[in-house]
Length: 123
Image 1: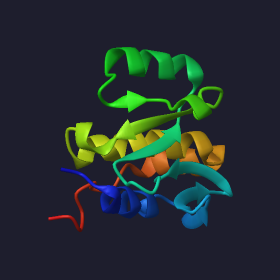
Image 2 (image 1 turned 90 degrees about the horizontal axis):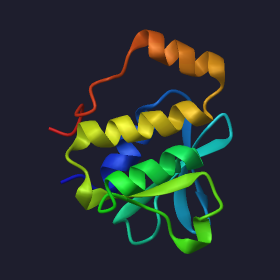
Image 3 (image 1 turned 180 degrees about the vertical axis):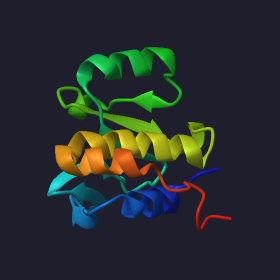
Image 4 (image 1 turned 135 degrees about the horizontal axis):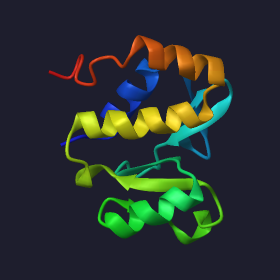
């Protein structure tokens, strides 16, 4: 099962990512733009997600994706760690959010170089 340590490890493996505490929780940013937060209970995390995609995600997999009422107007979605299939799925979710926050040139250069092994250092 994946956990909050996996979120941290993968997020920090993405180019130019830094960790910064905000709202008493770890947040991860690229070029100053937040792309993931890990709330205190560490059973879920929040990522960027366009609202039109978010509704589809939640409808398709409500056990995995959700939005608390206070975040309904945002372009973020929560992901339940226990509902993820594996570290590879976590990696894909984090990379998608990172790409939404990263400057275009950085995101393009990352695409060109390809992803790192999501299980690296976790075996």
